[in-house]
Image (cartoon, rainbow, N blue to C red; front, side, top):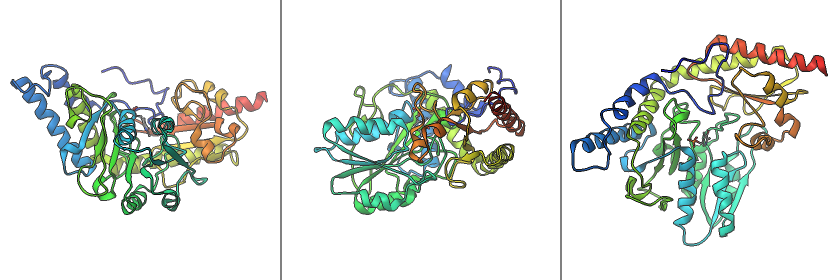
Length: 391
Ligand SMILES: *Cc1c(COP(=O)(O)O)cnc(C)c1O
């Protein structure tokens, strides 16, 4: 195992990715070494054992996701691919171009596939959210029209952590005969999730957001019940995953995804309480260090326990982040990696460009300690005071 980062560099960026849990690595290890068989090799025991491991993992994921038919779990390379498969796969299966409803605050891997459909004649409604980042389900109901084929609303936001009312939205979609997709990359393993009970037709999950390996994810594709829908594959070949996603399965990663999700579900209740305590402590300390100057972005309680996103009046966000070298957090201008544009999520809350830039996202997770929180407040305070002295 690589050495953990020194405690002087707290990792507070768990929305970007999470470290692989040791217990997950242990579950994966045999399939990285002696059990290297191809799960699609049906002629010998190497293949059979790999296939058995994959099917056990699929069953466990059904349990974690509230799905009864294991063939509804389609393994992908991650939530980006799952979102693309859900949206573009559904569009490809549609004879005529239609209409899709999504949110202005969705992840780029939802917004961009939707936008790519415009040149094929599709219409996309990107609905706004309230000042706390949440959509009103009645706005979805109002936006549904005869040609609406899909509604895609994320379960938990990756920047401000807010939880969307997906059960209510799914119920509206079901009643109106519209397929519902949710990007659950941030929510899976962190909040309770029952795809069947909640009426989630298509669900995207990513391994590396829940202490599993990178490069693995899944899409839940409901097969029975109403409304009926179909999706076309985006990738053709050996016909793996019921023909929806060809390509040799990364058996170790599949096993790791299942184990990681299981552990999150097992520990969810306790971990939620622990993280919310640390997160609230962080917020209280920041608020008392900068009275009246720091505001919390997103709904105060309808949010992930490990998420705090703040904007700080009168500071330069890029300077702040540069000063914070050694503190692994994200800023409001660096959320979608390569682009230095201000966060489209914070702009959707009605923030000015300056305030969107002057924001920090703290993502607390499994390894976060009270000491990390104390250090984070100290570093932020030092950085802001130094900017203040200069100005
Ligand atoms: C990380 C993330 C993704 C992309 O997941 P990958 O597995 O990295 O492709 C999609 N949506 C949300 C909300 C995310 O947080």
